[in-house]
Length: 163
Image (tube, rainbow, N blue to C red; front, side):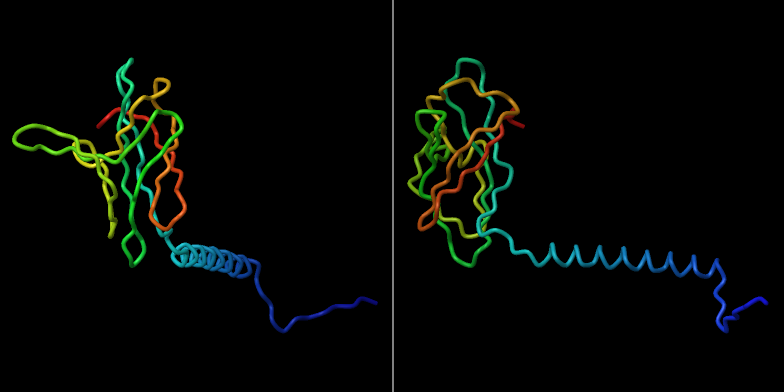
């Protein structure tokens, strides 16, 4: 005696394969969408640091300059009061200006950041004097940014040639 079972709904193997591929595709789309939405929903940091770098100086020169863009992602101004470091005698906020045809550097006591503050060659920069050892291209050196009513922010500045 043999027992046989008949199904009223018969799914062919090729249709099953098509359904499984569709399921895999929809699952992948779902994962991508969830990842995108998660990335979009994460808040930006209040202070965003973009492209911090130090100018590589010729051998024997004991000073350099630091450049960076600081973005304020809050609705209120942020005040940068000072900078500090451990690998040189001192660092300060400076601005290069041309006054009466002469290039001059001026010390800045503090800078108010409404949206964005750009430190760049020939303008605002972090002046660093008395570098303890020659800076090595490609290496990073930390500078602390001191803001009013906030904890200092330690930032790694990478040494490179000026563009």
